[in-house]
Image 1 (cartoon, helix red, strand yellow):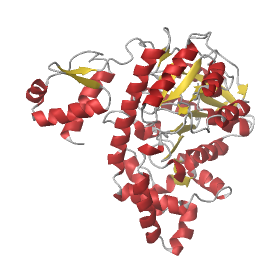
Image 2 (cartoon, rainbow, N blue to C red):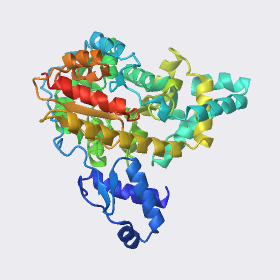
Image 3 (cartoon, rainbow, N blue to C red):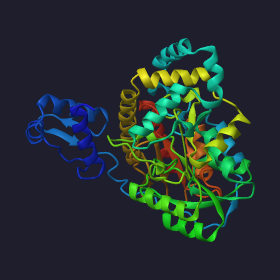
Image 4 (cartoon, rainbow, N blue to C red):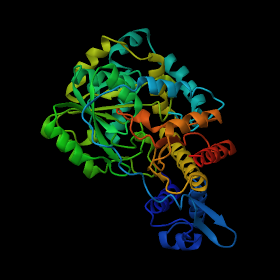
Length: 469
């Protein structure tokens, strides 16, 4: 990271932590240069970067100030989950009805599950596809079908190593996206009728997997900042025969919460105490804001209990469907189950991503992507402040591209969803994120697309519709 990027990140951290509040003046170029021992041009570069991220703005003859965004929406959503017994999961009909209605590309895509393709280096990836195919030998195509592309496995293992995790390459299984990784892992550690601890609200696809495998959900509340409620989890592990946990420890979908390293260690000790495996769904790992990458729970795993799953779909190449699982003690069983199902993801897609990771400037792309997402989050928060009703509560995740919004309880998010679609705006209503269809007054909004006047009008439309409740 260049010096101006480091300095910009230091200022951004102070803004995110509330040390520098909305409307507050940040150090002048001269002050910053003198205090930090950097040149004025470096300070200017940093401030231009912060402007592009939407965190500060310049005022003529006055200096730079923290942008006035989301001043009124100071309250985060509450942990509103009502205690429930282990539940049969029946959400697919509702989820499919919502997803089917999000296919119209003429709607404002606040309900989208993916960032905009405009944010991905698709042209550079096509070059890597050509290079990767040229380098493939016929023998390698067959050999890599079972184990995964050797160079790709090596690049993934290297990124684990850079994060402080020494991962043997033979623990990796390349999959058709993270969802296949998670499906395979869950099948390896459960039988129909078993109890699985999941977050609530939870990513709707995890609920659909439980429904398909005839597993019962034990819902554990998620705090907007602190992540999964470890006290509730401890009580449930002690009193119920839970066979597995499926959690997102970082930038949880839909709330965006991230566990601190201390809480990740506590979580792992609970798993270890009860010998319960955990599926760590970590598809947003690369989308953190700031300069410090988060450590997964896998980093604290000394018994192979954590099955770490991720992919390149959310950060690089959604259509390539290349993911992986680091299976710990379950790696061999997961690999064998994969051979019994899909055998192998596309070898050309694996070769393309392997080449891109090695030669394409992946980290440079990720920095650009994170900056874009942070600027888009700022714009959406500011629009929510302008248009949403009083007493709205909203998250401020430190990465990713989702906001979780809690309205007063008289707002029906399913009704809002249907009405908004009629007005050309999509959103994700709260009940699709719960095994028991709670969170009826909540929605998930995506800021994963570049902010335009169309986006602004979409937020204004939502505000107008909310005023009718």
